[in-house]
Length: 143
Image 1 (cartoon, helix red, strand yellow):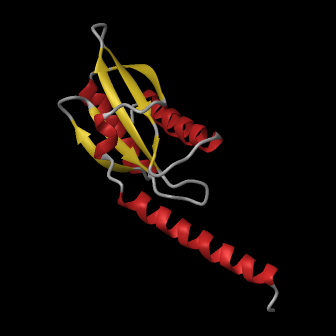
Image 2: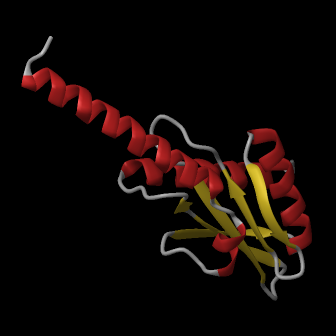
């Protein structure tokens, strides 16, 4: 097979695989602590009864049971970053979580999402909703 179309296809395939490998390496090298310092553009929040330290412990248990990695924790400020690994549809995400105690005994839980490389579209929304609903369910069940 010595046709120009076949050779072009092989070159394109090799270039695509090389770029994908570079992207995976970059995504694997990113550290979650950077996501804790600056709030991401995409963030959702909800309220829950309890103090930030109790809620932080429940989120840690949820992360350990659900397969999320705990990249950074700052108990004093009520911040933490969870992450997941790359998959067939994404480069992986960081999930910065910010806890703010309210005077009425509730805590505001803000869950953000930031791609480890770049990502847009419904995949981001699906991953964001998955972790948000998981944390909400863990807090409701008292896990």
